[in-house]
Length: 174
Image (cartoon, rainbow, N blue to C red; front, side, top):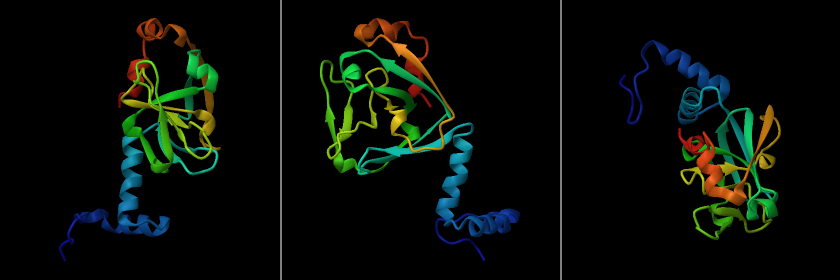
């Protein structure tokens, strides 16, 4: 019989598909997402994390080996903000959009989002990469980070530092 609305013909793979779904107890959509993620994000792992109180949760696809920036600009120094950068397409807010608030200053390009309840900034939109996210590695759940390499960046001289950095702007590109 022909597949129903929204379905597709799998031919000889239909038995494998059904067995895969059953073995992993996944709906058709969940199985498709799992396989698409595995293909699209090859070499990356899915990290999950959030704020302290749990009101804000997210997932992010990134390497298990993180390249973290330690910035000395005024706000990063005050917040001890260390972060790694990912493209927006690799970040998904799972819950808590209504529990986020944003602080901006100076050029207002950086969007410092934080939980209204506990005050933790688990991610933000960096000035250097407005098309991506800066993720706080200390807000990730245990078990997916293999190593962390930290690079100091001179945010006190932001324009000069970003201009001289060879790869920072590309870190938010898919």
